[in-house]
Amino acid sequence: MNRFISTIKVIAACALFTWSAGSFSQPAPREPLQNVAQLSASGSVEVQQDLLSISMNSTRDGVDATAVQSQLKQALDSALALAKQAAVPGQMEVRTGNFSLYPRYGKDGKINGWQGSTELVLEGKDFPRITSTAGKIQTLTMGGVSFALSREQRTKVEGEAQTLAIERFRVKAGEIAKSFGFSSYSLREVSINANDQGYTPRPRVMAMQAKSDMAESSIPVEAGKSTVLVTVSGSVQMK
Image 1 (tube, rainbow, N blue to C red):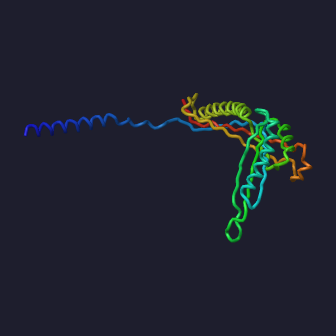
Image 2 (image 1 turned 90 degrees about the horizontal axis):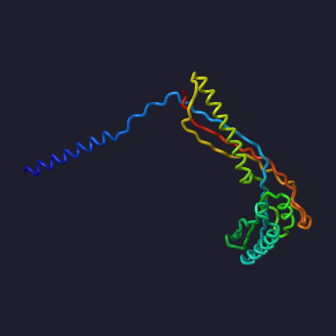
């Protein structure tokens, strides 16, 4: 009997200890925020696009899948060999793109042939080299032209836009604090986001002409501009 009573006492003591420890572990209620302002500011820099990408592609059609695949491979190998001769790291990079082969179905739902396509991409900062090489490739035709900012250009311009955004954020925070009758402020939290907005003009080629007309000629292109935008958002404690 005494042992049973002792066990009850131990259990009760453990329960009391657990409740006491739990009561002490409860976080103290947070005081409501006072005199805190939320704001954001942006900085933007417009810059010329310095990265050109031209995709060259070809399609083949036939009743035999192996023959279609072989034709695509020959067209790509020939273009790749020519492009590699002109490739220069950083100035013109060469890479293969999509390569696909899929069946063609007739009205009866059965396979009656095969279609395939292949792609080669020329990309870099040396516009004349890229367009000249693209004009020499005879086994593929031009599929598309796009412009962008190189990593180096983007990093440089983002730094400039970020400096503008931060300065505008500081000025705006000071003006808001002053408008509410405070003399200063301190930074509570902040986030910085960057993106670029640009357009890709069409190449100045109205239509693809016969391959013989394009031989040894550069494809005329003209880059546009991108606007790099950096936004600084956060909250300040007015004092």
